[in-house]
Length: 251
Image (cartoon, rainbow, N blue to C red):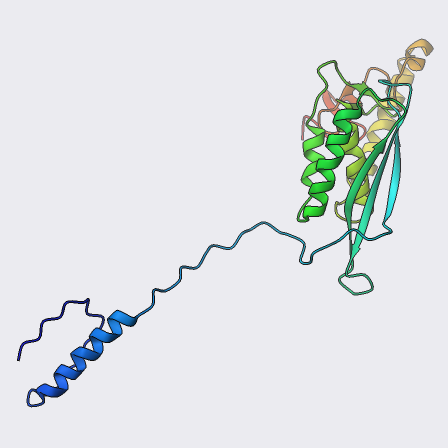
């Protein structure tokens, strides 16, 4: 007995030839299964974005730090306040994360973009995840009118980059970034290089006027180091060497 199957066959079984009724029953069961099978839901790819694991509302009281920025671009200082929220307080998983930032100054020249920048940065802080990328982004902003040298000989390309330094300092203080200080071996090497250079300068009898004209804590005539943005590159043994971070053109 021939049976026409209109629907798609999703399985089969072998029955004895003498039992035609059993064969018909098996075919009908397969047809019913094909018509009632529900489509399998496709699994959506999971996102790699890291969010805070809980819905965080702003507490009434937050802990934070205020940093003073004094630049030659203005007679008035900027005061940057970064407030932190403590997650999982009192447990072994306690974390301190930046939650909001405020900038205040008597100088109103930059009021609009400062307010916009602080609101955007605060939104990034509250979003969670890895917020340390803000430091590099702010350091990459250059003022078309030129930057300035901070006390100690460090070059600051813009006021925004100065804010990046504040954020970096704060993230280091709460443990989200590692300190960039030289290790014991590097510090010893830099100290030796500086001692050798100063001894060579003393033998060369450098004029007092040249020494007093130095604009940093490093020897006069030092060049700008592109790695640490500090005017501390001097020529030692025919090679440019930075007395601040230890970077050398000769490796």
